[in-house]
Length: 220
Length: 105
Image 1 (cartoon, helix red, strand yellow):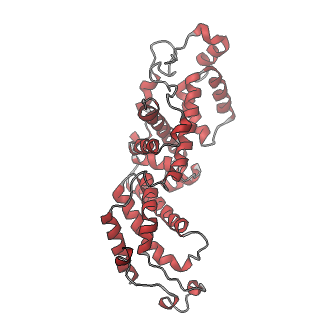
Image 2 (cartoon, helix red, strand yellow):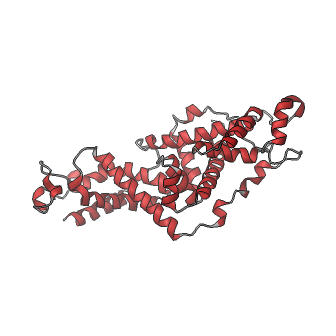
Image 3 (cartoon, chains in turn yellow, brown):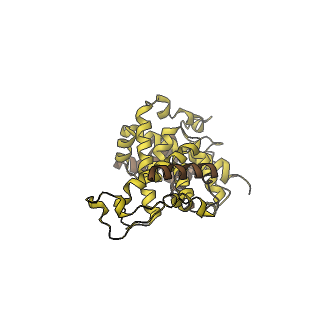
């Protein structure tokens, strides 16, 4: 079944420059890159789609990753698993994508505007700027630990991420999925420290409320 | 559902003082967010601690924001599970294979 796709092209040492130091891997590399598509394509696609929040862009990122992998096959010494190696390449592709798009689209003042949350802090009494009685964080109906076991919950979280403005979602992904520090994120996205901080706050305010409404306060 | 109305008589003099004289919830939630990214001044840390003693909705906000971080980390593990967030379509699978073949030859 898979045989029909697999053209018999092999990348062996003899195909590479004889003097190329990177080709000195003792064993002949005998790999059909199209097999990567079947073995890791879906995983890489999901990795990309949660970070790029766009299926077409995620597909392109997977393709670019596998193409880049062919180029760097010589330096992949099998130290990590194939999937880890490919995921590493994809991770860099996505960060490059963020870097590029943050420089192409100038920061709009609305992206660092927190006024959309003002209604959450409107009160009738004289406790100005404290939580509104009706819009303050609720006691969640469903236990958080259980949510972590449910695939459906992660679908909700993902769709909540999709609703954020693009740059805000990128900031949040770099911080919470890639675990980068503020300084690194500001460098990648060309942001001031203050903008980073405001955007993280904005992402948390929106996402917390979004998962509350769409999961935790919903009856099973 | 639990009401979050501020009832001065019930919350006690100390908490009332905190709510009246220290920064309000709107500022505290920003400090809470900053605390998750590890950058609080001593003053901010103190203000946050005091406020959280007096304000249940903000405690909830903090716990739920921490949960949000945790859940986002877990998103990574969930990628291995096929049921979640879809997969490459057959068309794109074929297209990528085609591109890989032409580039490798």
